[in-house]
Image 1 (tube, rainbow, N blue to C red):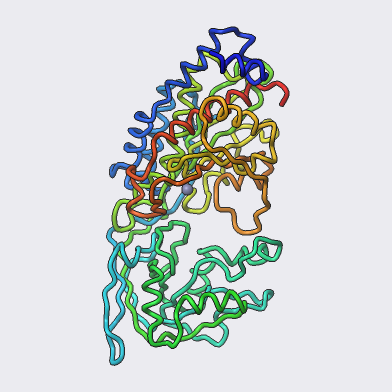
Image 2 (tube, rainbow, N blue to C red):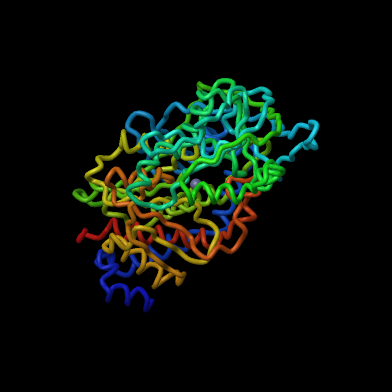
Length: 489
Ligand SMILES: [Zn+2]
């Protein structure tokens, strides 16, 4: 009880205390109804094979979206899209990966052949064209031709009919205004279509992660390989892969060359240009006749990377965030103390394909942007000991509600950072809201407890710490209620 009294004394629950002690009990009941067991069950549901790894655009993703919509409905969270209920639909082409395919170093007079293994050595390309390509292997650095930056990985290089070994990202590392000039070249899509334009027939992309944030390019076959494979492909060239990568970044000069090896890549995919995806959007209407016109937006992406070769469950990324906001929505829906402002919960689709869902929402908002108090985004919030509220320091009036909730009820490590301008390409749904002018806070966990398997078949529910998920939902429930009822905002 003393904590409640303390909070009243601190003014934090002033809006509720007017309602007397029963309201405090009402908050406690909803708070304690959030259960890690239930949340883990939900995470197991979303990561189960029936949803196929929730690849945005695929029927598996749509089934998962409908499951979430049903949960919202059952909890009494209302549909928020004026014409389409819970689902804000959008087109989303995707590729079905039927098997891992193969990556092979071909044997010739000087090279020992080798078949690489999935998933230890390579991952199939999520948007690779189907078929088989065979060719000489050329290291083409970052695969960038940027005349205005005086940088061209293809200079004096003939890649016609060849297969490229390519880096992701850009050679320029600093986060400053020059990085902005490199941004157009940082997209995987640019690199793939440019490689094809230059005449390459396929590519091995360094970095063993599954990634649907690429484009389907007609007859262009690719796969992702680990750095160990890149190192092996460099053997006999007189340089190591690691040295070469470092050298390019240091000198900011391309160092492309023929690796004098032949490789074969095989992809077993079906392109679905007709794919459809959606955001799932629910809302709890504010209880105050005036303040209810204002809203808070709470978001997490529901989609993951599908089943390229095997099921990639997408537990931490981002069944965790989805289950966190679902639990907070359910608690808020059953809370005896109502939020005065309205609260919108969005489960984004298409995040992994290029932030499609958040871009769509920002372009076609279900709520007028100038009436949105804040956006809180959760991505990979399910493994750790503490909380980080990135950007929170720049919005102390919002942060204080979360800090108070943590200080008084959750006792987790708690840190906040200031808004830091990002000159590279946006990487999260929150970043899309941020650049559209919304006050955006990214909620993360700190102090990782279990091994993180990012975009990997082992990103399953064993890698979650359900206790932090429960506390994240509790933090959200209290923080949302605090902000929604703070009349000084
Ligand atoms: Zn994510």
